[in-house]
Image (cartoon, rainbow, N blue to C red; front, side, top):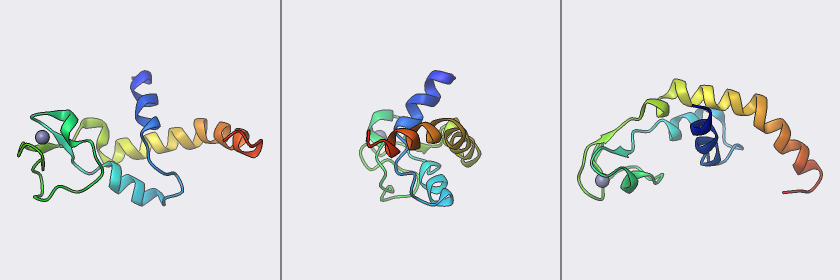
Length: 93
Ligand SMILES: [Zn+2]
């Protein structure tokens, strides 16, 4: 659980975006049920619920649901962000 959280956070786009926008983007169903790696981009599928690449059905992963995304964002705000700010202020990024 903990390990997966950190991996997911690495992939979380841009924290300057408003919270609701982030939640919307991250909670979009986009995991291909046929071949998972082919659906991890940010663009919307041409046909709702269908993978552009292989025509497979797009499913929503358990941890991509809005509630789960929101929870990850809260964890980030509390734990990772203060640390990131600390280093940013010292010109480390
Ligand atoms: Zn696919």
